[in-house]
Length: 192
Image (cartoon, rainbow, N blue to C red; front, side, top):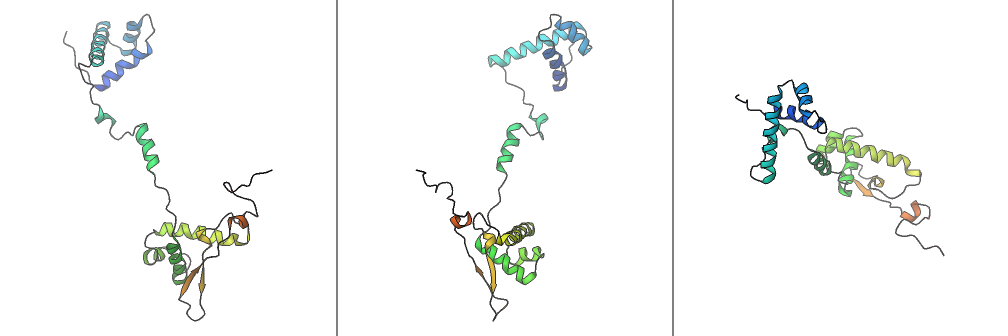
């Protein structure tokens, strides 16, 4: 009888009942029922599979490269690496924040696109909008105790002589003052 050459799909279809019936005393009969093939065909392909496995394990035959079937399907390792590659946010510099504040004076609140294009060219308009949101929230809680000083504490002072001229002024708070006298981790004093 001439045996048909199987492809990857037929191999996988054959391997499933092979695994399921591993400890079955009537293994081949169960596989015949599952696959709908004659007993002779099932035994032939089983013998061929055993022979191929022996060749592969002995190192006399290389494995088939099924990469074409796996293209586009990320493996666990690929997903894990991509997650690790995810870029974290880069903190704003004092210069960028100063330019942001100047942009607020020039263009007003909400014109993030112009602030991004003309003054804070290192950031996108979305990043400028996000920074503004954090800045305004930080300004709202000015009277509440802050954990530590932040770039969002920098405010704009406008001279009376020249309203368009603005300079950055920072009034940093010490960590000890912000936490109401409690020492931070690493600065803790031993208790006697």
